[in-house]
Length: 128
Image (tube, rainbow, N blue to C red; front, side):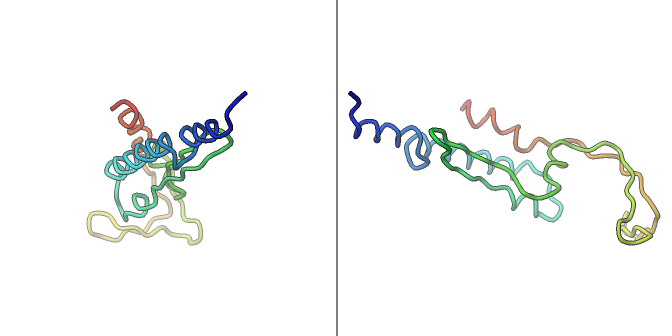
């Protein structure tokens, strides 16, 4: 017969976000966030400030979700191919380059190199 008090304490130790395993997982998650914020590219700082963590329990497992809800987060992380940029609401694009304002109907964007600011941190957070 299983001792209910022992099982409850063991379950809390292993599976609760406030248990010892959960606290260790949260510490590693904070490490990932700190390193990811240092690695992510910064233009306005909106993406960097939006990186956050959600730590919950789902049944008998703990779930640690680290990421951003910004629309461009995945584009930064995975990169983009070369593509055409066309205006959505106006007929002409207006942008600045080399200190001057340029108007154009379309622009060929060269693409963006991937910056795996989240996944790069995983091996360091769990191997230390």
